[in-house]
Length: 301
Image (cartoon, rainbow, N blue to C red; front, side):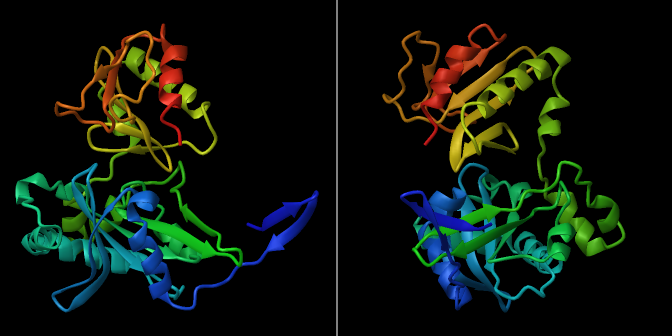
């Protein structure tokens, strides 16, 4: 990707300014984890069992620990290293909880963590085709993030998406007991996992709402979670939970800030709920589709 600045219709190329050290990338990410990845920083340089983890983070949406590693070397096997870290976490769950509680002065309990949502993220200025292909499995809990900086203090950050035709990694890990233990415990949820539980009319209704949300702005993407499907544009804007007779939609706007003249939404800020945001509504059909889109659009940054 080539970036340009423009002045009086004249384009001037903005040249990339490579990172000198991995630590530079780490510093940027740890200072902006919530903005970039929607995560909470637990500890920088966390050492366990003689292995050093660059960044230990926590995903408050999925209640899961996330390990982040920063790389300038393009010759590493991200899959091997990723499985090593996943296995390390699953074998030492108590140590991660203790670190969380001591670092953040919290009282997180073991049963409150969804270990099935554990994942590893590698961050680098670039990845090889082999690294990208090696992680292109729909149920592999390893993410790749590309980060580059430019001479005008601009930084681009792009998560590398798995292809729509990505297959399961389980046939490969079945041949290795250590890998099989990890893939048996960790679950990467897909959109299809949610659709398979619903009748055709709800699947059709969901598709209408999904397409309408995509049409609200460029760059909206979905990220399936255990209990809901999240729609994100940098951060979550809305979440949809599929039921057998309706959709439950959460709008990620703080209480008192949503303009809803028809009063379709309910303020759920004071009660427990699955999705993000303080407003919830239910849709049994598409009769209010356009109006609901006007509500969700308010959550787009």
